[in-house]
Image 1 (cartoon, rainbow, N blue to C red):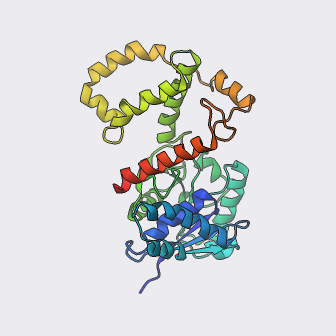
Image 2 (image 1 turned 45 degrees about the vertical axis):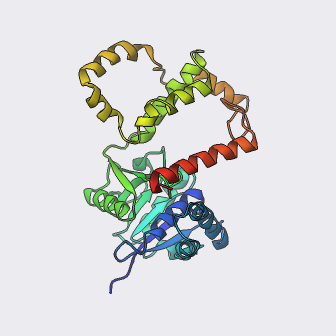
Image 3 (image 1 turned 90 degrees about the vertical axis):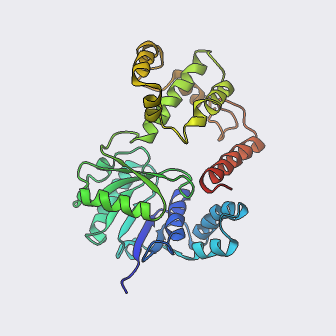
Length: 315
């Protein structure tokens, strides 16, 4: 019997532990299954296990998994403190270290040397160029972007980003493996800032901030406008399908009138810059576009997690 495929997550933070949980949770249903290891030089095995169990507690509370199943999933994850030991026989390595270009380049240069030549090396960066991250490696054809969305154990989407040198074989295998463990991978054919989803998300944020900045509506009204109108359609009807539904002739007519009048500045809002300069950072500081108490922050996070579990698991 051939061995299970092995995935190593480099970085034991919230994203790394969440991704490890995804593979560990799919181990029984994935054919040969996955051996899952997490490497972190600073986070110990106990803390990694605690983070995974904390994620799973939400699913236990919603009767998605039993407590015994949660323990089993956590047991499938092995923590390592030596990088060579963790990746030396890996089939897939997913990097989840801080968003520091120099750090990532050094790491991938090293991973390129110490992993099997057939291993796929993936970066979980949300904004940085996989091409630039891979620039110091030799076998760049096997390096690919895999942008998991937070929380990775709930959000289905993973953006698989083709760097300049990523091979078609690497793209195809990565897409297949992610689908195998229950994710919904999409293909991003070009390495561009923001990939696919973040480009659209931040285009919306730019206009939302501009509406507040211009005094058209306050922040609470902007959020309600999204949640109670097109936001309700988005899970079932994407923007381009919606355009086809209403008619591209109507879409063109609207764009000719509206697009010259919406926010198009190439840089961040001066209002946003001023808020950050004053220390108004949102949840972090208790004040952003709204005032946030500890209770308010907790309620917002709970509302989001409850919504995601209901959307994904129907519970």
